[in-house]
Length: 261
Image 1: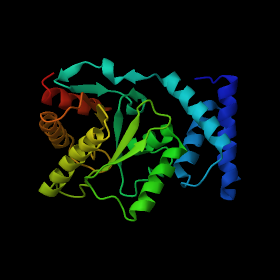
Image 2: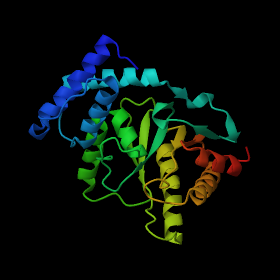
Image 3: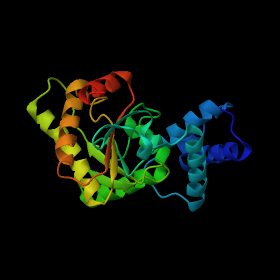
């Protein structure tokens, strides 16, 4: 998609600024086309450490990301049909969903994914939120003083995303065979996110498929745990809407069967 003049200027400014921060990037060849420039910007944001940045950079970055969001389109969670009482199933890009909070499948460092343009949800959320998100996560982790345990949840602002907040949780890593401990940890992820939302007066929560990507939790059993945990929690909760967000057709089919669609 061709950029308007102001958006093209913003893109060039952000790339130039991020390259200037690190002398080792001085030899990077800046591509001539918009698609590759966008990938370069995302890569530079992905590898940037949580260091201070100027208000000018943030203003221009925020303008760029917000216009990019408008071009990708926003989905309002309140308009999604219910699959059952207070539960929705939606296939789409969670970074374009307007709701109370989206859930990020984080790693134990809680700083986002540092692999340039990696396909994980952690990378996407940090890329579209902006560099402020990594800075806030880093501050929380400095105060905590140790890596985030599996199964808990942390709340941050959402910055340039259409949701109001992000709830970060570290799911279990299934390195070999699936164990009862893995199952209990994944259940704890869902419950901790729901409790965090309710404690902070967040009325709607959108879950990604926690641990089923890079962390190798089997998709079907992960979905069973997710649906069971959410159903049980909603029996005693005032939450208004829980959205199961899926990206792959495989996961959509699994959730459709579990929710009786």
